[in-house]
Image 1 (spheres, rainbow, N blue to C red):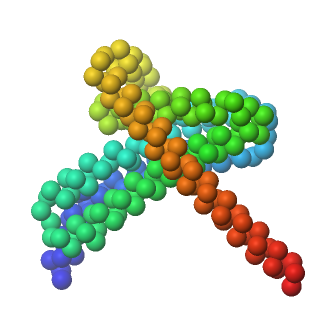
Image 2 (cartoon, rainbow, N blue to C red):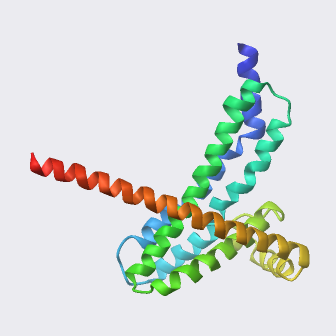
Image 3 (cartoon, one colour):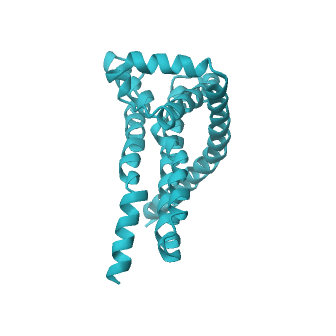
Length: 215
């Protein structure tokens, strides 16, 4: 038993230690989207724009978790017991990736809600596509160039140079475009499911509220 626990602890530290930190980074844009887009204010102050820039800088961290499937593949190939693989690695990594992706979807749903409030529905779809493209660049810079969101402040010159180079080089640009397409398709599908679940929850709460009012 002690051996199994030791192996589990070792396996988690080696292949799953990233989960808490990456989920925290993915959670930041979700929280910021609530403040930016759901407060009902139509004014955009200097503070609003500052928070918006931080939101954009951290947003790629949410879909970035999709690429963390490589950690799951590495863990499966590490020849741990079938129990550790099926009861720890697969469910834990899958849940982390799903939750991080859902943070991204809800953040963009909040962003779209803001455009509806502003009476600018026609900008929702192109803005979503542009946001996916920015996140595709961010994912590439994070996965392959090992940049972080805060490098926008700490290493702006190096980050800008690397971004321009990647956008003008065939192979990196191809990877970015492919990532953009994947994000766009996955987002559209998940958005429909998420909106359906939100609508369902609203109907349930409405019925419960109606029943309580009749009592």
